[in-house]
Image (cartoon, rainbow, N blue to C red; front, side, top):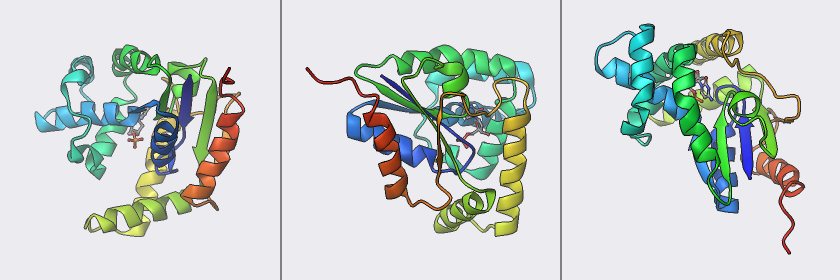
Length: 210
Ligand code: DC
């Protein structure tokens, strides 16, 4: 069983997807971490994330990069990820890896931007998790300040809007809600309420036990 969780940056999809995977004993894959790993690998070698061939090369070797590296979570790495994510060759190089994980038995939860539309269009459950830009910026701001990063809310909001525009506007697999995805707006929901809403949707699609 495949559960696709898509949505814009800081909508809460990572936390939701991880908790859903835990509950059902499914494999979890944060696909954003793959793009971040490609971005980080270029930055570490002093290479430009806009250098298309180098980015594709890094994507082909993504299995060699630890997806648990805390550096992946840094803001500048997220920005590099957003640049390499617009590269068609990078997306193609990461596709097989993502589909392999999706085949995991008894199930897998993948979160990202194009899981329900491109990576796993036949996923049994598709959730599109979103929230207003202001609420997402505030959540990201709290997260960054808790980590000791010195950031301004206005800057976080403008970076987030820039990232949204890049993710939605790119030609290749732009961020979009699949037609058959369930919309989950978390603007006014805390994580537990969002999870309850997600479980209610998922339970309807679970195979019935015999
Ligand atoms: O979810 P995140 O912030 O870790 O994602 C980092 C970048 O990777 C984001 O700008 C969009 C891109 N991305 C993508 O294009 N497709 C995915 N399936 C996941 C992430």
